[in-house]
Length: 159
Image (cartoon, rainbow, N blue to C red; front, side, top):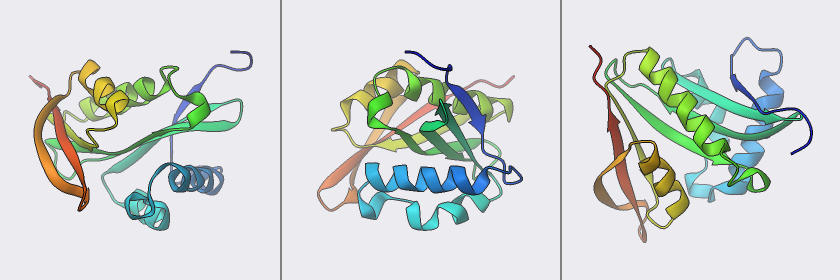
């Protein structure tokens, strides 16, 4: 791929590009996720939460994808969103975002990271398994009355 290499950045509230990045991520959110699953309307509020974070991948000035996470306690974290623009999929960007989010959580000495994923999104399920996540259980009607989710997790020993 010609052009600059992908640049992974943690979104900082004090960043001069905050509004531009959030606007672009909200557009991506609306495009990828069904309305009832989208955080587009509450994105700014989600990011204001004390223990939340967002990493995004930029390629030639274009936001290729992002991962959002939160740590509701000092022991666990939750990956709340992972999204990659269609034209950047299947190029390792989702994996790079997940690895960066996992590293960020591990640096905070988190013991467990969990997430939910639609079992029909096989490429996402396979990515999470490749990174060491295990399926905990099937949560019926998680997304909607006719859409379930796997709850997946990865544990770490923090000695």
